[in-house]
Image 1: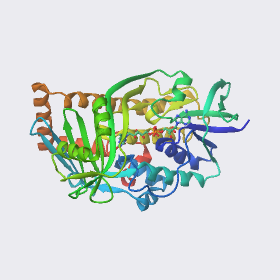
Image 2: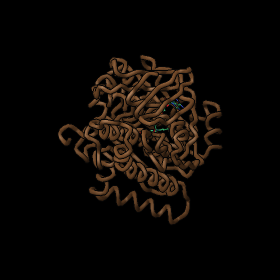
Image 3: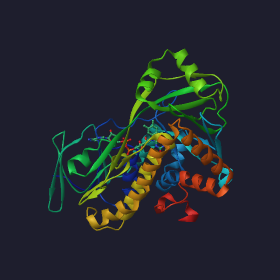
Image 4: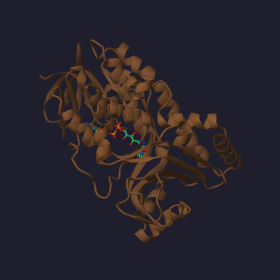
Length: 402
Ligand SMILES: Cc1cc2nc3c(=O)[nH]c(=O)nc-3n(C[C@H](O)[C@H](O)[C@H](O)COP(=O)(O)OP(=O)(O)OC[C@H]3O[C@@H](n4cnc5c(N)ncnc54)[C@H](O)[C@@H]3O)c2cc1C
């Protein structure tokens, strides 16, 4: 039976990043994903899946040495963020200059990050990438775990990491306690062409129906739209004739970027709040969406997952036995508090901004006004969202601060 030190189930961006962060430790790492390996090249016009990647995530990619390859393919840096509310005059602007930076973050296509990480990993002899199969059974033995794969192979591992997304097989199979609660929202995602330039600004309008975000893509008149709204409304939007869809989106966005026209298919993601109560057990750890799945309204899920990967890689760095519970608990203590805070904040925001009660409208107007007018409050939010503050793993800090 093949022996491996660490097995990662899930080759999403978080699982790939963890494999990368462990690549130079000399340990034998196996990564298993039931999907296809990432393919090289750019999607036309854009990959429908894009994420707002913050400074901490950028630092993690830089520490892996893959950032230049990512930016060489296609990224969109944004300098400003503009947020406003449907039911009140409240609005707020964030500018990278307020915190002395030249950007707030980057909008990056998932396929761009995945292919670069995959190519990086493929160059390491100690990394075994195993696609188009999945684990079907797990057995704990004295010094590790034995995984049975769908393709009939067996694998002995010292540590099994679940990076297998919101409906984690690893969490279920290991009996880790998890809680899930549908947000009763789905997210509609597509690519739009806009009449006016996006001005390298990320835009978000809080509507009673749910937040509508315009994320600036590399072309100055192309944006990725994410509208998180009641599931019946998303289904309606997904099936509207193109001309009506364009008009609905432009109107909901108050024509801030003029007329819009849809450039690709419309995809819908059901949204569920999911949290693992336990991130670890002896020889098991969960990272990324397998540990916490949050509402995309603040664009933080992947950024948090990358911090999980970085924190776990750091605690494992000098560990003799990577499956030891005491070591894995250090990772859990480090990351769970931060992730829980974000989960709670997202639930609170969703409720506050989805409400038409006079009290809630007043509360958010006041919140916007105070945040906009008090530089220390505003800078606190910017720095938190950019991943410039908090208890960051070494590789997520900018070199001069690490
Ligand atoms: C509409 C939307 C917009 C978002 N925008 C942002 C944003 O702007 N910024 C941000 O930071 N986050 C954003 N997020 C969140 C972000 O997409 C997720 O947090 C992130 O993709 C989680 O990555 P992951 O690798 O943990 O999980 P996933 O991306 O779900 O990857 C899991 C992987 O595991 C594999 N897998 C699953 N089960 C098995 C199994 N049993 N065996 C083998 N393989 C398996 C899957 O094939 C997949 O490759 C957004 C989410 C949504 C829905």
